[in-house]
Image 1 (spheres, one colour):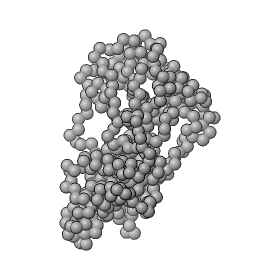
Image 2 (tube, rainbow, N blue to C red):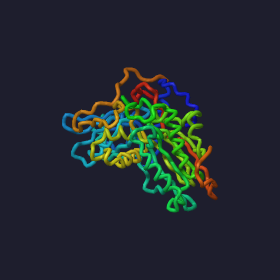
Image 3 (spheres, rainbow, N blue to C red):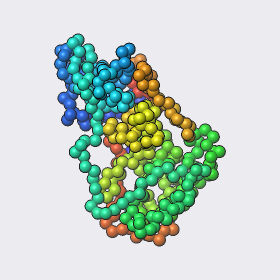
Image 4 (cartoon, one colour):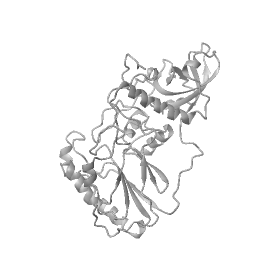
Amino acid sequence: MTGESTGTGAYDEFVGVFRDRYERLSGQLRGRVNHRPADSVEAMGGGADVEIIGLVNDIRSTASGHWLIELEDTTGTFPCLVMKDRDIADLVNELLMDECIAVSGTLADDAGIVFVDAIHFPDVPRTHRPSTADRHVQAALISDVHVGSQEFLADAWSRFADWLHTEAAEHVEYLLVAGDMVEGVGVYPDQDEELTIVDIYEQYEAFAEHLKEVPGDMEIVMIPGNHDAVRLAEPQPGFDEELREIMSAHDPQIVSNPAMVDVEGVNVLMYHGVSLDEVIAELPAEKASYDEPHKAMYHLLKKRHVAPQFGGSHPRRARGARLPRHRRGARRVPHRPRPQTGLGGSTTTSSRSTPAAGRRRPTSRSPSTSTPTPATPRSSISTRWR
């Protein structure tokens, strides 16, 4: 994020958000399928082979138990039917509204629907090779410190900080903190009953004191989370100047959530992960759960987006509450209402204070698929670009 957002939630900004999403993610798929726009598919003859790239606009089951997926591109929408007895039928349970996919199949005799033979996701290419540093260096990745909560693990933090001073951690030169430095105030009902520090600024002051336990020559990168004192909507900007000043020990680099951070030439995607709640709520338990959160992360990689489903149908859950899941096999209701009209047109106590030779300060940029989140529901995608 640039810190200079001018979004107001106007209709034309929704157009820009979804046009950008479609163009970026469809570009990942065009090398694998010979995409035909929705309006040109309508003009093709029945029985023709066809491949379409689009955003998932609707998913519902038919009376016979088959799956009807409505895909949408910049020219319109087109229905795609996945038969329940096909091997690919299980992939329908992985789909989220608004994600970008491609389908291959055959047009019905009347050219009014595509019978799907294959579903393609943007996914990480098989040829992808992670970037590496040109020297032996390590980073520690942590999150959810929650200073100010009764559940803050002060002893565990001290043991961690002490370990960073040992020979075993001599190659750990970077500390990446992925949000929720503090517990926050007013995040969920009756939260004050679970706080040891009830003032938000005092929470950050306490966190800053704990941060001073970290070796002084360590480069620190921090992003906010949903308990931090920034806006809740993603992408979240970095902390304001007052909070930055409070957390100034070690001169940390504070960036947005999410953010791509370059550490010694290694690209690291930092994201607090609130969208995992939505993914776990929408997908069957065997595909994503709180007990196995790595499965939900796998789906984000497969979909090539940290928040595939725009907005969300579920209210923010209270601490410890489970989120509901769809009853698969029943008609699936779209996750947002459809509008009736379309669119127009620092000081430290550490003894390690000398920067290591050859170290490069991390740099950051916002992920290419991060999207603003205006407060009103988006329009039907079929009219977004008209």
